[in-house]
Image (cartoon, rainbow, N blue to C red):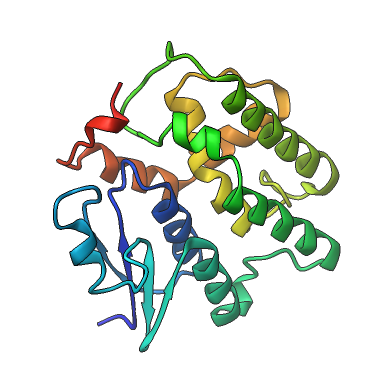
Length: 217
């Protein structure tokens, strides 16, 4: 039985769960996972059995409980240092942490008006000016990181890092809502979407039975 268990929300809707899961998969460690449907009558009561915040994701590792996606990612980076979940170079690492934290704390208009819904498509849905501003900032981050630090791979800092996991749900959102991307952001988005782990998650999301009406338009 694996020493690691991760508790997740619906794979179709839970962007924060996707972030933590992608990082965990990157470690190569064996783990169990349990999906707890969110926004149902007993969701919070069930989640509280595994996460003191009442939110998912939550990671259990040999008696240690870690909640919050970025905290989970940092914990995994320390627990599996050989995997190099952050860039080796100090300058790149500082920038990777900065853009990850910006994603973690910001872009609320994008998240509020364009919820993740991997199995649906809403290309005609209006994008608010505030959400558009979020998209512009995100794609500027992608372009800047790829141009300055992306040599040697297809991701923001060349190799896949926690920063890429943090932006992976945005890639899904832009695809769902039919947002047109140009040059570098488009290539980066395609690299994230084609990741085998991303496709594994997507396949599971498509086959989930749960529906959250507020996230369907």
